[in-house]
Image 1 (cartoon, rainbow, N blue to C red):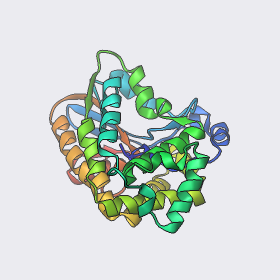
Image 2: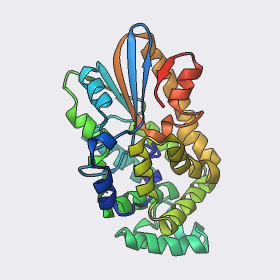
Image 3: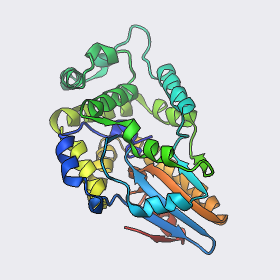
Image 4: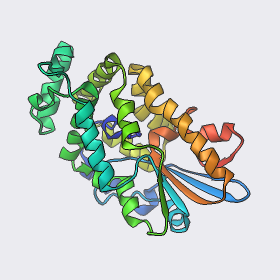
Amino acid sequence: MTLISPTPWRVRAAGVIGGLMALLAGPSLALPPIWIVRDADSEMVIFGSIHILPADLDWQPPVLSAALAKADDVWFELPIDMATQSRVSELALKKGLVAKGAHLSDKLSVAGRARLARVSTRAGIRPEQVERFRPWLAEATLSVAALQSQGAWARDGVEQVLSMGLDLKVERRAFETPEQQINVLANGREADQMASLEETLRRMDEEPDTYEALLASWMAGDLVALEREALEPIRQSTPTLYKTLIRDRNLRWVEVLKQRMDGSGRTVIIVGVGHLLGKDGLPERLRRLGYRVEGP
């Protein structure tokens, strides 16, 4: 669930999306990263998504469209349906509130409290609305609201768009349940959650063009820039969260991919692009296991 999966809330506040769309709207420029894994009787296409996107961005590469048209099964991080969305919301509220009488801002630094007020107001949220939220849920709420205020929505994100276009005969699979994904976020140490929230508030306040830069790097398939923009902040500020949100989940998912490659047929994998980058990314882990992986 991280942009990367980041989750949507690891994607930072947007700059002027309209200008970016004008620059990147041409289909010849749509080059988000994609990998292909093959053995004697299997083909697996792995695509790195961004979960929240502006409408009408022409991002889908022809290789992905062709793979989806021939796929036997398509895997997402979570099931893409209304029941899952409702369950995620239910669990977020169940596990995302502080104790009665507690306030989020009491645990923020002086600078963090000032940033919370500025960031909330710009995103169209009153600061008191997130006072009852635990750090991870506050980060989620603020980040998504900031993107929505700039015209980027989950309904236009990779997963929603691709799921709507899938043939009914294609088998849909998921790596995680809502319970598993929310638990990954909710069970993190409070100190790590606070550090992550403080860093997110800082970047949303001081670097408002971060999302625009990330989106441009994704559209260009620039893996070096993507790793710098999507993974380095969490690796540097909260290495424990990086391990929990990225590395450990990748280790579990690569076991699923190995089992799928042991079978036969055509598979498409759609997960946050952050799960595909660097030495901990799924493509590199598959290469180290001896699979032939084509791609960047």
